[in-house]
Image (cartoon, rainbow, N blue to C red; front, side, top):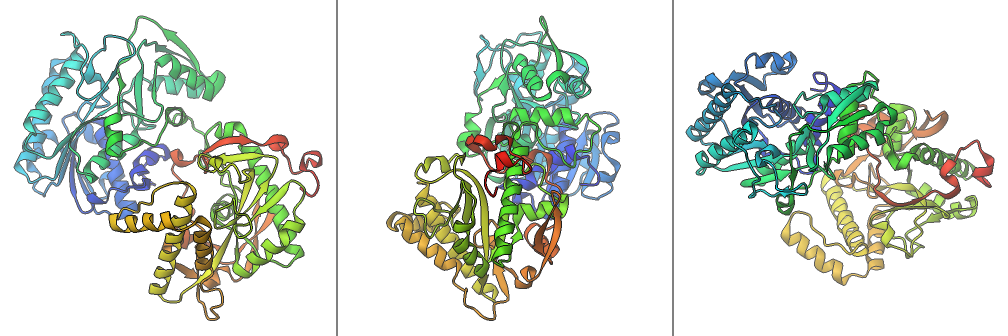
Length: 624
């Protein structure tokens, strides 16, 4: 599907595969999806899931719309996991159907047309009748906020059981309510749910939202009009709609739920201002009175209480929507104001860190490599991943220990080393370099006021592990256990790994073990195989890939140098094998909506380094 969809379509279509809770319950299922553009987009997501997760799901796509098949990308039909039928021939589907999703008029422009009413109600009944005849596991209706009608005041936010006024001449409201009522009554004995969305934004999806002409005009810097609204409107990016659908399936949740994006409920005037904030003078938007913009403000507390949280905010949704109309190369796309416009300075500081580490390591004959996303950037971009805000380096244990020993005496003024063995306020298991007269704190690290929270640079160690798969698994599980003891004790959080008994035991241990005891045990566990002479494997005990177990020790035997931001930096000679082991297809770019800064920084002050340039000696200071 990566070759079939454009990058913006691929972004929202791939989103369920990138979610923390992946829709594994769709494995080997047959899914009937009916409707219009939203149904087609949903079908594409399942095809992406098949590619990424090997789900083996099959989609039966149905529509009452004439010539709808022509809207389907031909290559998507040719794959074999997407089959199209008109609604009139829905009974001809002989294969078993497990799940039914009717997107209906969600994201469709509703005309005052009795033919549209007949067509949509006929489609709905055909879908429900099929569901009744088959032993389906779940049926879901997608509706939207227009169903609520108008509230009695401009500050009205609608919860699921509430309804506003519906004038007899408001065809959209009457039609949507008729569809929902029919669905609710006819599916009483089925496992059913209704998801009401805000106004859906989806770059390249061609759904109706009343804003596409505005987005296109902003992309071209052309004048455009937008009707003002007194009431607020809830918006949602397609990513969160699809993830919510799969969440209802995965958790087997019934009932009616509202869904909108993060911080995505605004008036159209505020929306126009946001576009201006992002795109500046390109947003030539004139606000018009005496018009209407369909949509309502949603209260989405019910789905949040069930455990679901959206992932995309309105600013991100707007930027993606406008950018989808440009012809620019988006391979290096990043959001406009990451770190409030300081990302270039941040990457310049990180580059100086790398040069400083390289100088120290050359002097003391210490072997080191670019690691993690930094190594990924070297292989793929010949420098930083364009949207990355940190640097990772890696060493083997002997080199790591030597670096920790010599670095404090070699570091330039204003830079310190944080070592968990020596700094009792610092409880990460890996070392960091910090700029002491800066602040760069995440939401939880800012709570540790005794710890230096200056701008940081991570130093990881890859330790030896067992040669057997069983030994590696035990080593990884012990590491994860002690990591949980340290992190959750330090941050006053309960441990929960999805298993009640294990979580209860872990929380009991967390409560009785002192923090520094757990840190000592974690560091001991990391070095458990330090003296193993015939060790064939290493593991990522300090990093995110600890659960993967061991990888070939020879990956880190030899060094070569690759171009990195105009400098030659050390990487493993077998960097391709290393990256494949950690990331799979490491040359595949991240979906656009995930290209956000790696850290949610809540306190940030770069001080004199805000205008940092490596070539500027006055800003660099001694040795930096």
